Length: 376
Image (cartoon, rainbow, N blue to C red; front, side, top):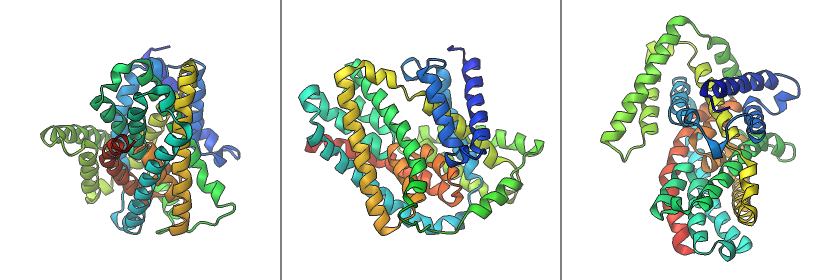
């Protein structure tokens, strides 16, 4: 079951099934991105493929290499003029979402009272969740390392298991939010409508061999260059460097004429989402019994309050449900999952803003996590 070729073939099969299912009458209501997460989550919980508690190097490789390179390929399609209207609203909504996370943590702290069961560790966990639900898992680990929380063994593992479950569920929820909300609160999309453009690009985005060999070379080389530059300037995340390289290349005529970058990037995003689904390990949370239930309630209420506040304020100021869902996902899951939502909604003009606010979350999340620990 842990053979990487077997696991990779299953992940690819789930992507294949999700794409085909997403084109059916019933599947189109959910979309391929949501379906691939659900499919792999079911297999992981049935122990047909490895999950978070028995993760394999293949999963780490997909997170480390494929996810960033997928961003690179999708950014080769970016039209800078189409994102100017989305820039300011995305940033404002993201800051609203970050404040909503902080408010959610503080309200959940007094409602759930995790300190009663977890003692002094509760404040550290609250800070870790505040960090990760502002900008993703990098902040979770940064705070854990500062307080040597990784040495807590089962409590650390339980915190991660709960985070994985909540993050996966929130991807599913944010994919569903726009369709649900617009049934009783009509939305107002910001920026140009991209459906026609997306359909046209999909028609033109057909591979040829020359384009494929160039795309593979450029993706791997750019990833290497970004990693090397990040070693010289560690204060700049490598994903920002990689994104910058992609945007610069995208403005050249040669790159613009290459075909298939969007399809290649989207496929890699689906493989990444398949691993996200595999990490949704419900059994690990149940095994923790009372501690697991407390962590699950605390994290669930935090994210629910984040979503409620973000939707209410976002609805009052902008009411672009897809943009609000993408920004919320940037908070809870990070830039890569936010990008996946932008792709799923066919909002190509929001791909770059999704990545940028995700990076902003990575920058702010650790500070917010430490702030929460300080005030509790």
